Length: 313
Figure 1 (tube, rainbow, N blue to C red):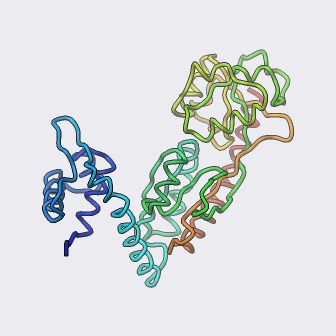
Figure 2: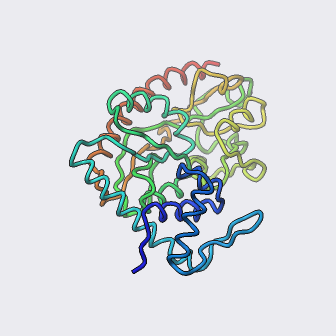
């Protein structure tokens, strides 16, 4: 019988993910020689080459490609065993791996982290930022315990818990003459100047849905990777963009721009927490969901006041 250690499988998983010995070693918190030695021992025990080492890159072999989903399932089951054992002792301790989309993370994290530290001091919250599709895949594979995103999340294997509503507003240059008499109807021709995030961001699809029949002409010219980039473009008069209310701050990001509300019914997104239906951390996920719901609701109240101030800018 071939005997592989959990450590070897974790190292294999990290290297298969990164295809880089240095980054894989950093991901699992060991030195590169230590990781290389364990991979070599794993290959020897299996009797096959798992990775092709080049001077500049690493390629996964066909044998490793076939092994990878099986090893991922084994690691996910081991993590579930650990979670069940922790729950038997005391909940809300140890690692909790939370994924967040980029249009939520920088605005909600400052509110969540102090609450987690205060309420659950033994919980080690590990954060991962990526687009929704990636987070859903990693949660289903057991790499994440839960993900924070906006509905819809189209995966039957996930339990989705709605948390709060995040209203959409329009960010425009502060001296823009087209937006002197809000609110803005979703069919307004002015929305043709709308700038969008690049493909893969759910906010891009939500923006297109808000616009309805109006097609933003700038979508071919700009494909920003973050809201911060879009804010900079707006403040320099390059166009307008859709902004979630939670992203409104009193800092420099909103300088030289104002926000304009849409006509009723005002569009919004529903922020949610999602986790595997068969997760042994179901109760803990619900506790995290309640904490985020409270922190998010408090943050939205402050964002509303900030939005009102910027509407008058």
